[in-house]
Image (cartoon, rainbow, N blue to C red; front, side):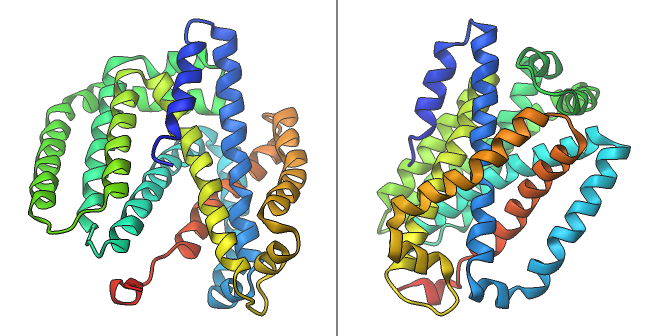
Length: 313
């Protein structure tokens, strides 16, 4: 899982000098990223325990988000796109922190400092990327739609402010990295999977800073690929025990994890095709952004870890 970004980066480098193929790769990566988002809805609405535990959120989140996104898209679509993009970047980093924390707890290690460490790396990588290239021009080269390019225009307007933050971001990242190394050296036990995942994340963010186009494809694609593996793990666990109201686990016991992902692919393929065909059609935009926002919101619920004492087993 730690190295899933490498094939995406390799594919991006292979078509780096062919604008048409590069745009196609970006499109396919974004569609693949969208395809993983409805998985969260399936895991929430297919599990009675999740619905009971978060009844108000499950009922009202779709309503509030549809209204907010529809209103925002009609008034200031570039702001909605900017918020969605920033939220997606943060959400991806949170998944990486969650995996580090999971492996740390399996070795009885407190990994709370990893959150600040990862954020310092990401902020530095984004600032370096903005300082090195014209993000708006790059977005247009990649064929991203007008909502996204307009959002990048707004971000580029504060280019000088972002560049001025570079020394501060660099200093913070160096301090956080130094502290983390010292803390790791003082530990009596270590988690090699966690260290590998942290090192791989560092390499991915260096790539994002040095070559933002390749790094963007690797960052987005790897997140979706990792999510499918995490969901497979969750469904495997659900299939091992019978819980009343858990339709996800019940279906997994009948058709297996392969059958479940096959059924999911059949269900989500028409949705992906609709989003692709309709493109900037207003209803398709609202559907796309709402599913993404629900994915972000519900993820914070279904993957929430128990307290460390309860997680020790």
